[in-house]
Image (cartoon, rainbow, N blue to C red; front, top):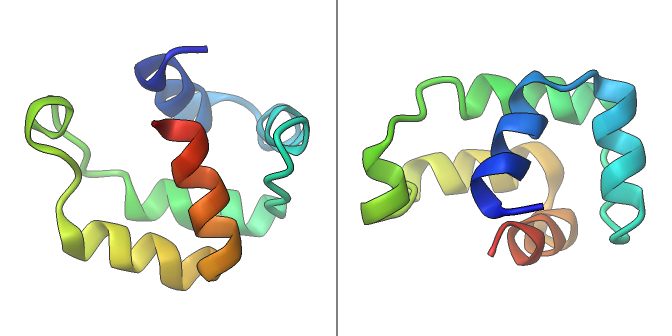
Length: 78
């Protein structure tokens, strides 16, 4: 799955499906964490594809899931 597709899936797929998919890549997010990440990334815009995700948004995402899970998720999104 490409980065853009994965992001769309993370934002709009069912929490169960997102969780199962990410578990295949050793990213163990709870449904609650997925819900909170969706809130953090809710204001995503197309410029993020070119300029990258703003540091403040990334820091909020890391606070939601913790450092280890955050690193694994970001590796998957690269």
